[in-house]
Image 1 (cartoon, rainbow, N blue to C red):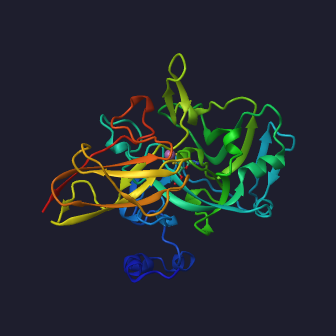
Image 2 (cartoon, helix red, strand yellow; image 1 turned 180 degrees about the vertical axis):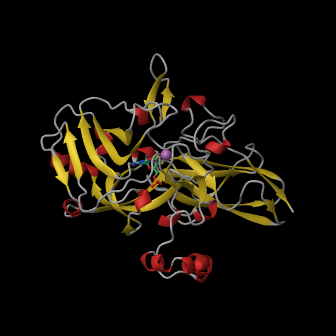
Image 3 (spheres, rainbow, N blue to C red; image 1 turned 90 degrees about the horizontal axis):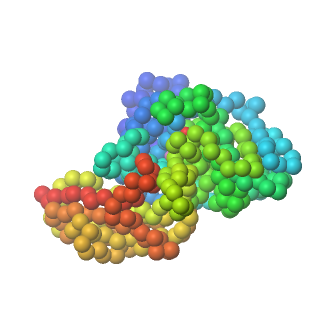
Length: 376
Ligand SMILES: Nc1nc2c(c(=O)[nH]1)N[C@H]1C(S)=C(S)[C@@H](COP(=O)(O)O)O[C@H]1N2
Ligand SMILES: [Mo]
C-alpha cells in the first residue's frame, strides 16, 4: 500500500536515518508509531481514539498487550505441539496448518483491563484509557479442527493454550519462570469463533501480535487469545495456572460462598471516539460517533446522555449489530457544557452498569463513565 503524503512527511526524518531498513520496512509502519506508550518493556501500546474510527483497526495501530518480551521464534524450526488428553500427539508445522481448511473471521479483542484509568479509586495494573481494543479480520484454522485431528479423549475438560514468551512475575509472585498461558473449556474451544491465526487483516500477523501463530478466542477478553502459540495441552481437569487465578480472575457469587473464577466473556460496552474528555466544543450541533461491542452477542442499541445519565436518546447503528465484532454508531448533540455518557445494550438485554462492581477486581470495566465537555 503506498504511503499517503501525510504519512510520507511524518516518516521522512526516520527514513533518512535508516536507509538500509527502509527497504525492509518500506510498506510497514513500525508498531509504536503514533501509539500511546503504557509500558516500554515489555511493550504495551494503546490505540489513540482517532484510530478507532474504522471498522478494521490498522495492524500498526492495533493495541499491544504483552506480559513478557516478544520471544525469538526460529521459523524454520517452528512447530505447534498438540498434547495431553488426546489419542494422537501432533507436531504441526506452519505448512501442515496451512494445508488445512482456512477460515477468516472478524473478531474484536478488548483487554480485560481496558478503561482502567477511569476507575475510582485507582486499581493496580496498566492504566489504559479506552484504547486497549481493536477489531481485525483474522485468518487461520479452526481450533476445533486441530482438536478433531488430535482426537480428544473422553473426559477432557480444558484446552490450555501456551505462548512461547516467558519470564518471572514478582507482584503477585509467579512460581518462578512461567510462560503466558490460558486454559479455556473444551466446549468453548470447539466453537467456530476460536481459531489459530497467521494473518491479520489479510497481511501476515505482525510479530508483536503473536507471529507466526496466535489463538483468537472470539467474544472473550483478550487474555484468552494467546500469542506466539507453541503448545496446546488438553487436560481432564480445569486449569488453575497463574494467569487465571492470581491474574485475570474475578469474584463469582453465584455459589454459596464467593470464589475466584477466570475472566471470560467481554461485556457490552460503547465508547465515544469523536470527542475527547474535557473537549472545548464550538457552538452548534456536534457529531458524536464511536464503537460498541458485546462479546459473544450482537449489539442491539447504543444510547447517549448529555446530562449525566438522566435522559437518554438512541444513537444510530451504522450497520446491524453482530456477535464477536464491534458496530459503529453515530449521534449528535447540541453544543454546551455537558456530561456525556454512552451506553450499549446487547440482544440479550444486558446493559452497562451505572456503578463499578468491585468483585470484578481490576477487570471487566464497562460501568458508565461521564465525559465532561465545555463550550467555546
Ligand atoms: N503469549 C502471550 N499471549 C498473550 C498475551 C501475552 O502477554 N503473551 N497477552 C494477552 C492479553 S492480556 C491480551 S489483551 C491480548 C492482546 O493482544 P494484542 O497484543 O495482539 O493486541 O493478547 C493476549 N495474549
Ligand atoms: Mo489483556
